[in-house]
Image (cartoon, rainbow, N blue to C red; front, top):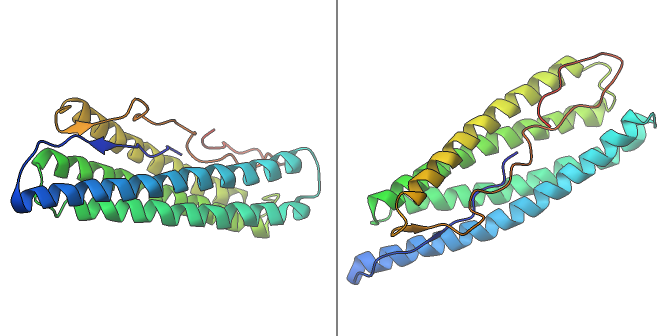
Length: 205
């Protein structure tokens, strides 16, 4: 799952309504960055909870005793996804403002990237839901692996849009200023399913 790009603007000075529109765009960016920070923290917590459960299942511990951890992962990821949805809404709002076309295009690319990532995270939440009922994936391994594969596809689409947005920003440094870590970190695509008696082609890392 990609960590969403953190971004900020450098805008040329202007007056009147247009200046107000630029300020509103900057406010949307600030709010989005706050939501993105919340998302990333919660996302890491969700993956940590799931990773702990998965390790214990693969070590031979009772899978049913890991249900609480898997539930914790699902609920935490749902909260993370809510923060990402708020950030995405901010980017959609920015596209309606009277600002430089480059900024509108940038916001549009980020909105598309977040949309693909939201889809990926929705599939991951669905995967956790399956594991809550069948933590060893004895009955639902094929279905779970299919969902993880779809999540991985969504992740690749999100990465493409993020890369396009980053390139647009780098080619317009007088309009969009990216911080040094703006390319983000790649946390892998979808999580791996626990290994079991049935061997499957797990997706992601």
